[in-house]
Image (cartoon, rainbow, N blue to C red; front, side):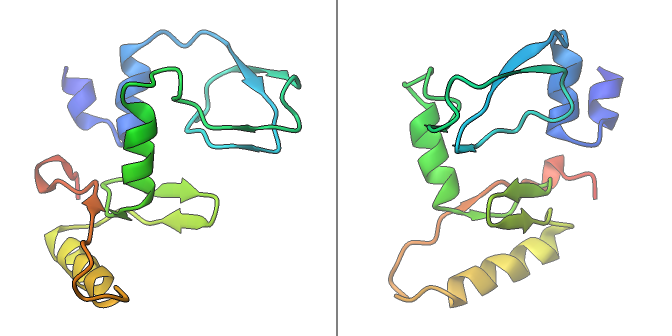
Length: 125
């Protein structure tokens, strides 16, 4: 358990909890994934398709992805997305500054602002 608390990312914790067997990677026009450095094989079956992993758990993954991607991501880790990388929040003040900026950037001041990801208790910064 001590190693989990000292890991540098949630991905590291996940790797420590599971065996690292080889996985199959399907190529596609676009794939949204958080694979990391896990060993892999390449399968070109879906080269001309779009794949978003997670739809096999239809009870929650599509909803979580929709909520996350429509939210202001203020996470304890960097998020590498197709449009660029969202840097990790460094501390509570950084979180509040970025949340305030996101609020001021809303086109409609009555629009709800959804934020996702930052928890001071879990930030190693």
